[in-house]
Image 1 (tube, rainbow, N blue to C red):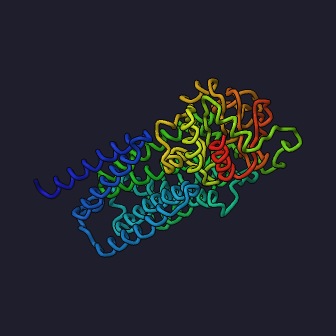
Image 2 (cartoon, rainbow, N blue to C red):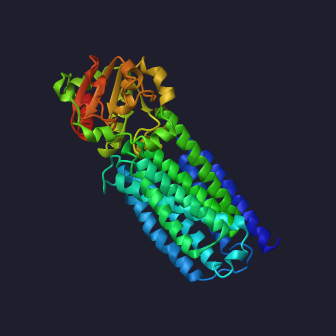
Length: 470
């Protein structure tokens, strides 16, 4: 077996591991194993690449600046590993966003580098080769700048509300159309000057694309940007004649699109509506809500502890507030305490609860909640009517009955967890402020609902103590 064949075999093995990893990531039980499989495949792919000579389109350059390449990898590892290990779980979405942006930026730089490499004989490149390069720049730069704005929104470096202005969609459309026009011109008359213009416009398109998207839609946005990065990487793979990049990028692009579609369905909204409706802007336009003027029924930790301790089935519905309070460990202790008393307990997970796909699954897995106790919305809803208590911790819009009963509501049509069907509802909230949609939750005023005000972590700790004493 010659070196070329050995490298192709290594790339094939790596591609297989990527597919197996995606299969593993489809289930919480296999997600950790899938991550390790993907990491092993990437190590194989990177290692094999150091033995490749053919680095570009129709030329044999060999590897240059290997020490700089190794230095860059070491520096990247030194930055990324501590960030990933010490980043709080509430900050995980923005970590994913910025890592995704770095991937898109890298793909754009690869394409620019390839263009620079051929600037002396750029007119000798085939049209499809130029197309591969310019698409890598366009999509990669869009992903980079868009992910940077998503990171800034999630990190609260800027407002998480939609940023809109008159004629925004028209202006955005003109900028994007200008970018496509430059792509066409580059195919006919390749020019380094136009490449820089394309790069600038692509960065602007990414920013303008993300600005009007509100925080509640960021999970869908992250998934879509991830797909963009995959497409940019695939374009880089064609540019560099790298089969493994083509396969990996295509897998990321396809899985990102599928996840985006599934999440849009989970929200009961089309992707264009999510991208262009500035969902959540109404919340910034008015007061937090009028719920404080309406009577609600509140309870003490001792009262609610008795209700939970003597229930037969309790369904816990977590949301972003659980992550903000970092209460995942204490909610697991609450579940274990109830189970020790013979109570049937499980967690009902809404597909878009939190700030990224699978946020609640990851959060509860970190607290070592058994996978069997995590049930997706479609699996949990049929059991909701048999629950004695639905305990809502940090969720709001994902249990709001307005999604089923109010046609004029911004969330109308969104599938929700049917907490209103439980015999009793315990709603844990800091205040009566509405969720991101900016609308009141009628479930708060349901005669079956008891509110427990306060920080989720502190309130859950009091419940655990009270249940043990009940």
